[in-house]
Amino acid sequence: MTEGPGFRVGVRLALDWGQARIGVAACDAHGTLAYPVETISSASDLDAVGRRLRAIVAEYEPMEILLGLPTHLKGVEGAAAGGVREKAAWLVAEFPAIGVRLIDERLTTVVASRQLRAAGRAAKQQRSVIDQAAAVAILEQALERERNTGLPGGESVTERTQG
Image (cartoon, rainbow, N blue to C red):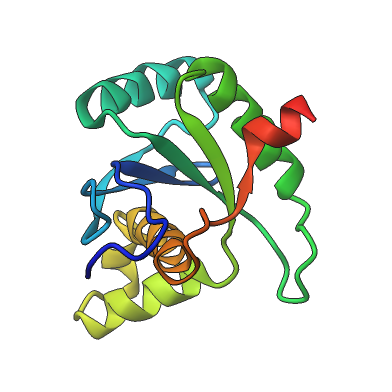
């Protein structure tokens, strides 16, 4: 896929931050390919998460971190959204030079599960990679929006926090 008008060149990381695990995905600078990176298993231990994310950020040097925001099918934020917004504020404080955006993650886990099942992974085999696949879906959604509209996907946490 090629860059569209207004498409910002730069690596992006996507996080599917659940209660137990964090799925991490990345893309190349031109947004051609989104791919799974890893699953961080200690999602509730911010010290451990911080160490791991600092290492990932140092390796990938992203221009932006995209964080999945739990939203109900009707478009309203789910109960977990407040916790994700807190994580987003933590990411802004932890990585002040990197943009952080919230991406509506409706159905990303469902889509990821279907794709894994279609690839021949049974439900038990999916557990280890479902969060990564959901992060890939979040990233692909944001990239597609930017390719089609020239506007970044989701909501900027930096602007929301400042304004």
